[in-house]
Image: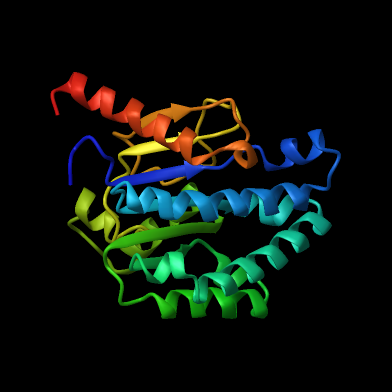
Length: 232
């Protein structure tokens, strides 16, 4: 793969609720519109040569602290979207392996977990592209869990390699490029903190439901331009 195309892109899809508010709609309508955007972006990214796409879906804090009606709506949306992914032609025709990381197994209700498990099972043997969802996730929580596991094992030789082996992301390469929508130029809740230390960052004022494949291509062009300046 050309170094002008990032191998691993992480997306922080911010702005669903603000978009919904501006439209006079409920927050869940914004999240549903955001899901439609992801349906368009994922196959497009794969077709452009991106191997890994990691999506910030729901933080642990959001799950625990947001309005119960919004959380319930999100869980219902997750249930529907993962059910659709089980048989998605965009997924199967491109050999996309689905992974879901975070505390969702202990936090989500059974019907949602069933569809997530089925989507992962249906794609477990694929290895051309990877679609990673971070749900009920917090980067600090991920790091603390890794440290606790190392301590429990009595590890004496702790290195960057051994830490990585205990992260949720142990089977993923570092993130090359982070795209954040919504006009907030910062990261969130330690998102993939171990894997983004050398990542390029790209921010857009567009809210996630407004984001298009053309915007994605603009981001890729900016990444390629930066790589050329570095001599890639």
